[in-house]
Image 1 (tube, chains in turn purple, brown):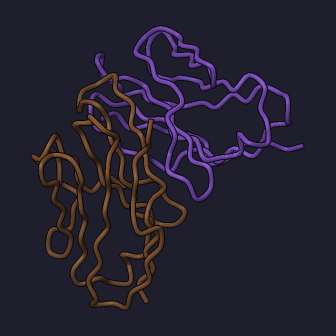
Image 2 (cartoon, chains in turn red, brown):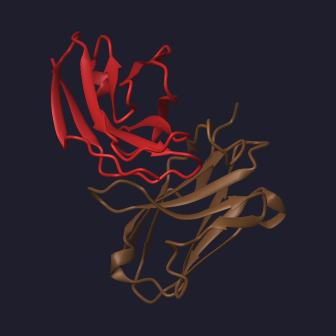
Length: 107
Length: 115
């Protein structure tokens, strides 16, 4: 699996878009980019994943750069319930979590 | 659809005692994972099963940890004997297949405190 680098913490105002970056410069051509989040005292929750193209679902959007060396998870209208640790994983078939980004949504 | 079930939710033991955790994955999911999450850290993969066979146990401390998945459904993770540093949340996850383009579904975990 490719190593990923994320900022340890970020703040976002409620109602604004939260943009969470992830660097995965050593990603191989067939490794997907996955995003999970973990709300306190719960197991991680799947958010979104992609290979090359940008992806969008009901929770978030995933923007992957053309060279695939980095990506951004976008929560379009952050709410207080989005306060969590967000993990970016670059993987083919095994899921190794780093320390993630602790996002705090501020009222 | 029922999620991944884990029990117990909490466990407190003394060092050198034994402990076991149980996991029931989502029905039909072939792949099962056990993770250890120490406070302030991300989940660490301990072992991955495909049906009842082990795919990856490279990070499992085999001198004290063991895991099995009988009949390719439920799984148990055992620690014997426990050490203080084993205090953590033990998470179970499952997916339909082990390959790429699959999402993991996690249980709520078992919080273990070793005194």
